[in-house]
Image (cartoon, rainbow, N blue to C red; front, top):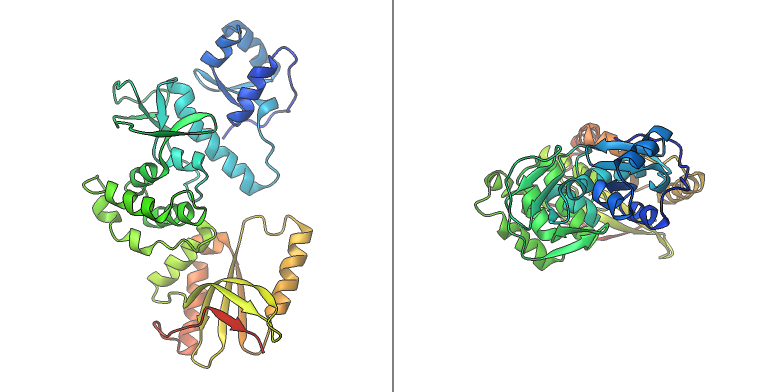
Amino acid sequence: MFSEGMSRQPSSVPAGLIETARRQAGLLNARQFEAYGLDWDRRKVLIDSGALVQVRPRVVLLLAAQPRAVNRSEELDLCRVQTALLGPLACGPTAVVTGIPALVLAGVQGAPQRFVPEVTLRCGGPCLPRDGVRVRRTPVKESVLCFGVPCVLPQVALAQAVCEVSHLTGVALMDSARNRQIIGENDFIAARRLTFRKRGSVNAKAWWAESDPRADSPAETVARITCTDLGFPPDMLQLKVFDRNGAWVGRIDLAWRLPDGSWLLGEVDGVDWHNERRQVERDLNRQNALLSPITTIRRWTGGAAFKGRLADEVAEILSASGWKPGCPAPSRLYLP
């Protein structure tokens, strides 16, 4: 989303302003510059020198303060955070972040790569977009600080977001918020109640029962839901596996117990699985330890889950085995 230029630290930018930018993923607004006595002419000089990038009429990116993403996953997450921060930075100190942006800043995974920054204004104000920012007319009873800016409570943000996204995105947001303990179970129930009578709540009504906090990533959520939609729900999530001596081997994302007593074990890898050699070696050693006469192991990328290839392959394997849903399965597997 934003330019990647060189991360040089301009000596003419006050240290306090640089620290503010670091708290805000490298972003600053005009008001923050002015607080340090830097007017538009000075900002223009910094833009011309390549130290700043103009991203909105009143918002800039200080390249020296932008976090360094070490892989594609971190780069995408940084982009989401920066998009979420555009709302309060463009709309001023009375702005409170809402919806998907508030979930992103709280640390919830599963948000779309592209979304509209949004806020509500404590002072009221018109519901007109500002510099590409959606402005809600939503009363704010309580807020929390994330990245130094006020946000609605995560359960409120979840209720706002779920009614406006797709099925898979909605469940992924729920799963992540619960898995990361950003909201507790009482707050999850409260979020569901907050959707009543909201536009889109009828379509989203059944999604809440589909949420499962055991999903460690949005890709796992998508894998579970797409397999279920085809009629092949996992028999067990996060199956605990031990060797013949009772030693821990690992947890399996998705598992199906086949009619002959063997297991189909499915793992969904992140987009950067091959980036770290040590991680690759650990995963290969673990996979070798899982091999046995009663296990069939399949490993998929997150992309395979999102594109439906994972669910199609699972359906093919399970159909050939005669698998049927609803058979009880243990939460632990001991390899022979």
